[in-house]
Image (cartoon, rainbow, N blue to C red):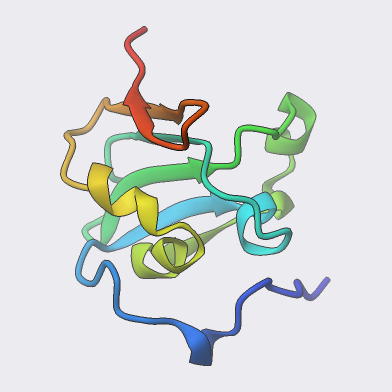
Length: 109
């Protein structure tokens, strides 16, 4: 199945270059929702940043289907939601969610 992305590659700007790859759900890249939850895992390869970005509206069933997410350059996701730039330097193990004002707040579990 071909995905119809909300943004076109030719419209991307250089917002977050050199951070490597990440995982993001289709709710962001296909439906155009903003990032509502992000966490940073241990990278799985040398170009992996470890970041995973979700809208926060995904169900467990949705997340269990690998077809609902893909690997992207972080700059791609920054074009969907430039707000992620403020959290990219945080270390592995970091988790963030957006508060009601749209600002990322660190989540401690």
